[in-house]
Image (cartoon, rainbow, N blue to C red; front, side, top):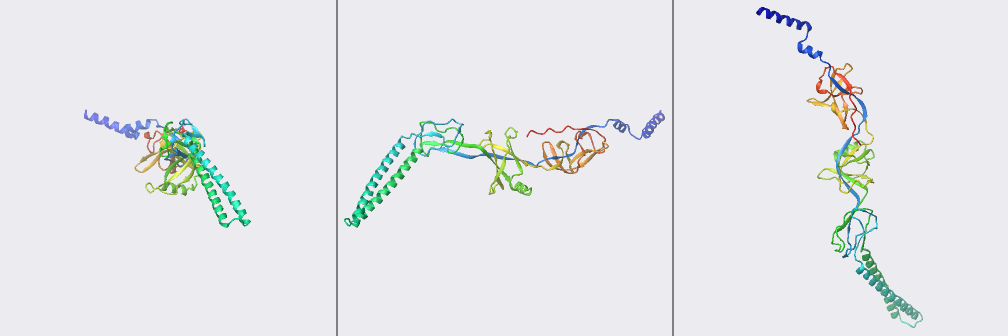
Amino acid sequence: MTYLRSTIAGLALAGASAFGLSPAARAQQAAPAPAVLVQTVEAKPLANQSELIGRAAAVDKVDIRARVKGTLGPRKFTDGGQVKEGDVLFTIEPDTYQAMVDQKTAARDSAKATLANADGQLKRASELLRTNTGTQMTYDQRLSEQLQAKAAVAQAEADLRDAQIQLSYTEIRSPITGRIGRAAVSPGNLVSPDSGVLATVVSEHPMRVLFPVTQRELMDARRDGQTDGSGIVVQLRLADGSLYKEKGKLDFIDVTVDAKTDGQIVRAIFDNKDSALTDGQTLRIVLEDKNPAMVLAVQQAAIAIDQTGPFVYVVNDKNVVEQRPIKPGVSRDGLTGVETGLKAGDKVIVQGQQKVRPGMTVNPSPAPAPIAKPR
């Protein structure tokens, strides 16, 4: 019985040796090649892009204050509405200031009358002196009186101008065109220069956006020839993640460096025709090259990393898998530029990498193109 079992086992081993494969290996060989999705490597325009945090800042922003003391009259605007330069926003009861103007007008007229009399007296004294019927002392006295009368007229006219200016301050006008905020003081209250801000007017067209840039980033930009910002596209990412439809342009780099952050403030300007940007609003500034370089690009899903660094799986012309180490470059919109390790026309596995290993035969199919994010 023992001899029979040994004989059967020997025959089984001999059969396996005859085929050259173990049962497990034969089963694996008989399995179909795993299906994978591949992307053909090709050159694409892929711009460098960076996002920074910034804040919107109005070109003009004015706090409206009272310049004279008095009772505040009815406001002449709607909270949050548009106002034009020169529009009356508030009034202050003008009666006291109008009375002061009337008083100063009378004082000026009186001074002018005194001057007219002094002119006549001086003319007569001059005639008498010419005919030797008057004295030099009388002439000198009349000349002094005439000069004093002129000075009195000048003082009266200055006092009148001051009173007129004070009266003009009873109409509080907008110095700029823009949108006005809410009124901080209600009509009927006594206001003065110490009453604080009555309202704020902000010019929203255009709108500036300020953001800090590190010294390293500025050096990289200068090295790339971006000294004036003309080769950079500036966009804004709003709070909901969408990109603002208008593109801006860089127009200013601060002349000092913040000692705490070692950064400089850079300014971009946007037309803001739809008033979507508000003074003080926090924004993400998106900077990218206007003329991006052509680079070999693969889908980001194709790239894996092990202890030796980034790599991709490439399918050769015999559908055999190869592992290629790469040096990644710029990444955006689901694509990554590859600086070294690939060439145009290579077929890179973008889906199904977990089922393959180097040297394995696969069944490749073209992968759909990645859907670009709306811009």
